[in-house]
Length: 398
Image 1: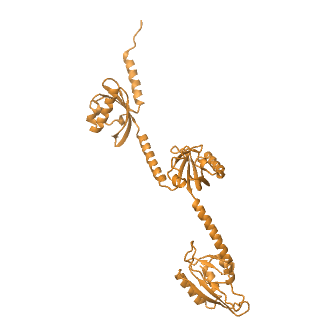
Image 2 (image 1 turned 90 degrees about the horizontal axis):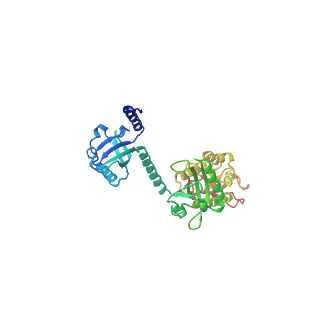
Image 3 (image 1 turned 90 degrees about the vertical axis):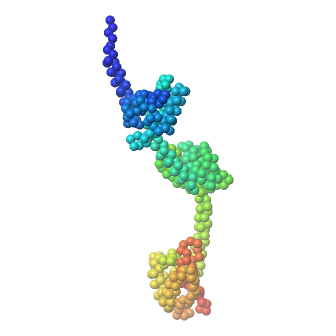
């Protein structure tokens, strides 16, 4: 004879299992009828209910929400009941003073009832909004930058290029996407570029700098200054970031400047004029060897570049130091002025022809295109003539 198990313990066990199941679920679970009336509310996560369960049961959506939101929910219910399919959507509700976002799903349970499951996606939604804002800032920066920003895959394939690619290399922003970046590198620079790329791949977060030649769309080669950073471990990037700029014109200008300076320096040292260059503050910028020899100034004084000490040494050699000093002060007060003066040295014989030597001097503003512009220079005599009948010519050159 078989004895039936009492029903009460079975029911209690089932209730306990159901209660444990609900406690493990964070989603909101509601049963609504075709009129949008709350029929059942599962005790899963009361903190995510728009109102306490006791205030919702028996009421319709139109009684709880504003007309617009209530009608939107009703449209989802009608669609689920009519099509007998699950309707997915997102919605937000103000709960406990904050906006909570839900991912909702409404499925038909019977002919006139549905079950709504709402999952809290607030954190995910806010993270997505932060990412969108970050992307907008990034695009705003790169789209208005003169530097080109390129993202490369681990194999060197271009996966993104900023719009500034066009003015720098002539290609559209998407024209080289999917192409190996090294195809654009000059053959003579390619091995070094690949070596640096391999170095980047081995060291996440590492940064390298280099200069190389890249192929312009018009067939010419442009000199680029490039910086690469390994951002493969960054979930928001996952690429090698390369930033580069065109330095072709800059290098050409630098080369021309070096050539010009080389010519000027050669002229500076080969002239028979003694030349001293000072700035507006009276600091010695440069001088040639002829200047030091003519004024017999020790190297220790000139190398100190102390104009006051140099001037004091010079004043001891001229017959009229006060007049000479006044002329210098006048020129400092008027940087654009020019002057031609004759200096008489005391106690200095010119090849034994007399007790002193005279030397006309000329001064004027600096005419170079680089600093110091408009700097006055002290009188600088040209080398005295060996003939007593010929006057030595001085130079007050800027």
